[in-house]
Image (cartoon, rainbow, N blue to C red; front, side, top):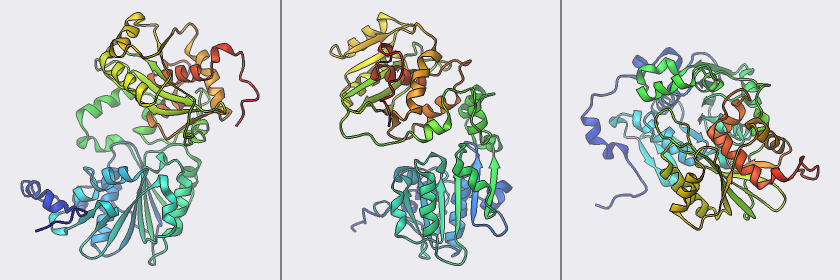
Length: 421
């Protein structure tokens, strides 16, 4: 019998796995109280919680309950990209497919970006990068995941709000790890928004030992406060970069960039306490505007990260690799050339403090001369949490080397006033 290649029925694919384990306990019996749909008359349920809190499972169970109970029949599932919507909201370990029982006969049609229940309820996947697609459809419910990551969170929210016009009581679920966006602050003030806050530690019994160990390394940092304890941090006057510098710097690059370089801040060891090797790809257009094209930073031994850097050199047709040689010196150059002797390499030696080297780059961001072609979460978190008194992190150092080369900072005494947006 010919099968429909466009339809994936999770229950046929995973039937053996389901038969080998006990039926899942009802969600209401195992969930924490702050993971259940809140009572009362609300339009938006915002789960503002740290990583590992269980945001995905909470929202997925709510969508499942609404759809199976005939409460809502036209549902939007929105993530940063279509791929993330599928991988996390639908097929992830806590996604809607994974938590559904065999008897529910839930079907997923990837080519149509569609989940369908036997009772006719459907959920359609969308990527926030193409939020204009929300102009035509109509919904009675929606789940928006990690919306603080969106490039245009307010525009996406506004389009979705206008599309939520079916039924008598449309509802929206927002799940995210917080960032101090003005948009989030505005939502917190609305009287139709119910906010649940939570930390990663509340779900500690379901988190891996490796993840819990990583939490120890974050103790006492702003990153811990935001990503683990879900605190909505305000601007820190002690950091070089501000959130507003980063929020305004996302822009797609032009088709042609006249100069592309790879900046490297190398780590010479690869044990569990080692820094990552920062590898940042950046390019400049013909109007003196630079773009961060990729963050390929990695925790690996020198041979692995060197191969990654050389591969990026060819992939992006870079003109050179700029690498700090304070530690490693000629050995690093020999390593790169042993992989490809034709690669152009510029060794740089840090003779001034990292703050002095970074400050001109901060000014370039403030003047609107540097863009990120997409959100680079780890890099951007390092930028907005780095204080001069602290050790500068890997990705940030690689970024500074790349931009210093593109703008030829060493040959100018100040940022030319003509370098404007």
